[in-house]
Image: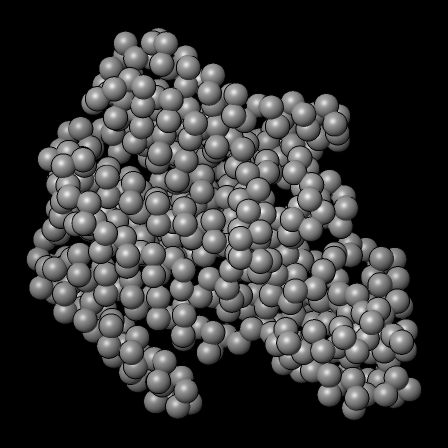
Length: 522
């Protein structure tokens, strides 16, 4: 059965589950963030505020870390929904849903409807999409571009060579997201597939046209940027951000840990790879796809776990081919059952509010455990996905409380010249959730100037503020900023206020510290 013979309504319900999960908790930092997300959101917000289409900037300084497609997508979302963290992440969440759908098409092409449904749910509820599908970063959109290029290449072989044009368009989009590495990934997957299945297409006019389309979509931005910014652009983007990643010492241990990250990002369904029995076409096609991701990312000296996100689709599609052995699914059912028991036990040591959030989560986990034990894996994955959605929408925001941004607005209204800046972290998430323009300071002179001019400073490490101890007469720490603190702390007694707010800088929320000079504020 080919992917096109599967009735569309049969794929809608697993897609609906993935969509619920993808958009759950999207607008709160309580579900986690990442240092890179803080930069990308800041660049997208500034592009929206300044109306600059060509060059992203941070506090007016051009930034050449990545091409602009993600920022353009954010800007469109800001125009549609208003500037917010939810709008900044909307594009990534939408890409996550589309990526799960392409995973279903890939598995359904070879193994039919049931495999397609499982693949959609496995990919859409995997740890990789649970993590990076909720962040305004390039990884999930890049994975979508690669999956779209692979799907179009297979359709070109099976049906009509003109599908290669879509592969070229997807590759061009990937280049505008991530740079030259996207062309390397797509070329490896598409050329490898054509060389194996239909070599005549490699030199056809459609392949040439696809390459031309990819270059036509992406190259103009690079040429214009080089023309406008000169060596500042070329040295930073091509030198430091691309070639520079090969300048350090290569490490086998680092590469091995990156491969291990692929298995972690594919949890919990990666265990179903044991005993999977794909047909020859899917096995070789998936191997080419996975190799096209692993090999290029194995070469640089800089290697991060999220580089492996584009390989999640072929890995979990293989896991979705057939139902696993009874012992394996029953083991998974037992694990989910133990999670259920743990949730019920832990809830009794917490507040009533946390219990009311945890009990529905535990109930859904129990349903997932029963379905897994009985071999109803599509329903098990759907139940697991809904449990994760409850966790993101209800449990985490109740446990990992985000800063009170309403209080910031009150302070801003009262203290007209109050300026907010970050130290040692990118300001984008702060700007998105506060509605204020948060800038960034980099060194001691900038910090000193900021604090002396009615500045509120955010940093991850309270100990780093020791060097400014000569400014501090009294220290205090709070969970959130409120206007009452300003009333209760007259400038003569409290020239600085310290407070901590749980805004994440990586996986789990850290305690961030802020100082504000009251004496210099009118």
